[in-house]
Length: 74
Ligand SMILES: [Zn+2]
Image (cartoon, rainbow, N blue to C red):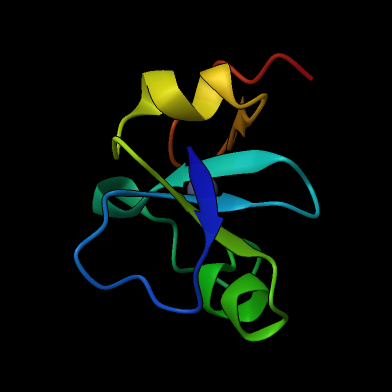
């Protein structure tokens, strides 16, 4: 299940529902052109997953972020 969130607290994977992309916070690219997690959280586009796994994010139709996970299908 995916649910809206405005915080990264306690999560490993966060989705950007605007771009349908999932990010791995353990490998987050914090450069200006990186994952931009804070930006999409602030914009209200953040989602978290139950369970908090990459498989669950894929199941929900989210694609890998090319910067922190790689092997993006797009
Ligand atoms: Zn990312």
